[in-house]
Amino acid sequence: MPALAPLKRRLISLVYEALILAALLLAATLPIVLLTRGWDHLYSRLTLQTGLLIICGGFYVAQWRGMGQTLPMKTWKLRLVCADGTPVTRMRAAGRYAVALVSISAMGMGFLWAVLDRDKQFLHDRLAGTRLVSTG
Image (cartoon, rainbow, N blue to C red; front, top):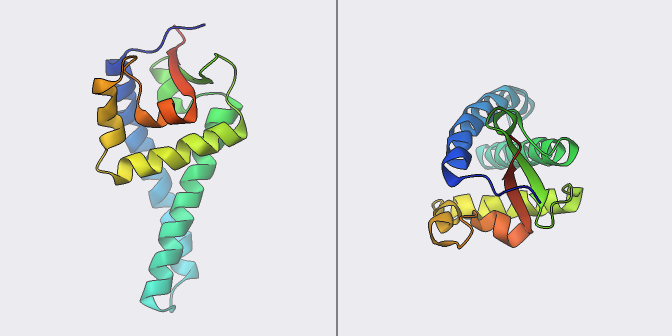
């Protein structure tokens, strides 16, 4: 089984991941805003937020399921696998995304969990049964 990637490399990859995510969200926002123009503010805002969460989820699940890695993960030689080292299934990737959303919503506590975890894993990886491993 490949070695668990070092925490430092995973954290640096997160910074790069945030830049890619920002570009994706920016590109996805305009069509949703144009679609909901003229709607009640509450509904247009809810549609925008829900749409962006779905787009992000689709992006990450497709990347993790298809190649096991996003561009930042590929750059930093990381791959997402199941705890037993097998490729990630669509359901496991979706579960990881859902748990990561909760982790982020809780002021990033799921990422801070890595400091306490025996294997230095993020909480969403621990709960989803996944691991970020080194590819090189």
